[in-house]
Amino acid sequence: MPTLFRRKRPEPLRDPDALSTELARRAIVLARRSIVEYTRMRVGRNWPQLFSEAAFQEALACACKAATPLCLVWTTRTARRAGLTAAACCEVCADPSGAHEIWCETLARVAVDALGKLPAASMGEDREDHAEALRALRRLPATPPVSLAEVVAPQEAARFALLLPLERGFTDDDRETIRNTLRLALAELYEDLSRRLDVAALTRVRPAG
Image (tube, rainbow, N blue to C red; front, side, top):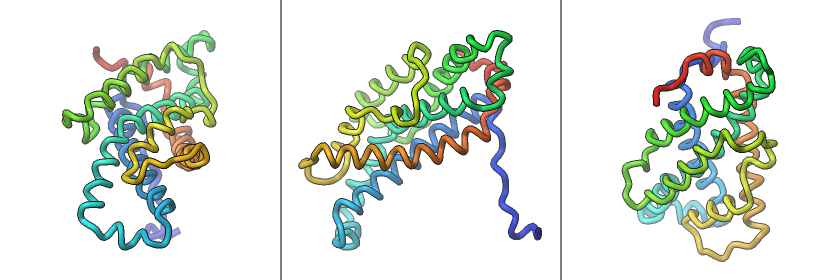
């Protein structure tokens, strides 16, 4: 196949710093994609007019930044699940029952580092969002593995809905639609990370701290 048409294979994630950068990047992308796509769907046919307004674009950008800490929690949970199901996970330690704890401890430290790489991290008004995300990330080793369906909790979908630059009249159906939209995006992330995570290398190189 000619080089022009060959898709470049993403690099494996073997280094904690590379993984933290990737988690932060994915959180930013997830926030932007989900906020923009759901807002367009909710507004309907009038979205081009609304999106052309400078004030709305500013509100949209603020909403995307505010959503990144919550999106990082979801990308981290997805990475945890992907790491546990990756083939490399069996090499983490001699006792397979200890693989989950070692991987989660490593991932928690990496994710806390990723939190500091988010663009909203320096915004004073986002301190509470970051503090809540930090608590969730640090609790990661103590929580059992979750299925992909449980990555986004109902109360978190409700919080996400409040960040949207729209009227606050959300119903339970709206929140479930948001949750399903996020699940689809996270399923794609799961498939990618399942192929790229080198859990054995990541757990051998322990992040500082």
